[in-house]
Image (cartoon, rainbow, N blue to C red; front, side):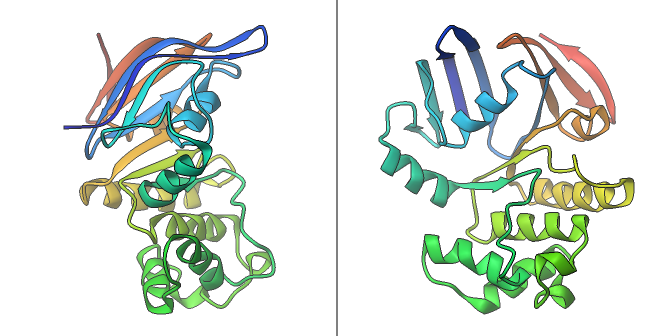
Length: 228
């Protein structure tokens, strides 16, 4: 069953065609990676899937909802209720503890629940760091707070933009292991990455070039095989 269907989307900024007639489907529970050089349209695609932008042309169905025609207000609600966002730059509030940063996401969704927020931090191995400020956490720990924040409202889709881009090898492996467990739990994951090793963790890799899908690679046992 498809969670996400992209049908003929294009995005035009002035004279720049950031995306050109892109078709793509993401199945429920699938782990998909998106790769491509700078300017290929990765960020534009992420913003559209994440309800932060709308295509100039085409249709995007998320859980059966045509998000390409929804108002900005409705897109905010859909993003809050259905999508967990993870960014390369963390975007934590520096004067709030790890626990409070996670609870902020609850506040905008429903009601803050400290017990649930602690469980989310425990899920990413940070229960003992719950009362620490971002400045007291390593980069890898800050990224895990971001993952806990993204998961706290039980999203249908986890959308991650270069989630290991600022991490060393050890912390990258910790984050990838969390993603593996999420995938085993049936959570749909879309990861935008420049790292082939991260992309190989996914079931498929969509490679963008000049705003188009150049090819799709099916990853089996860590070895990519080109698909149609």
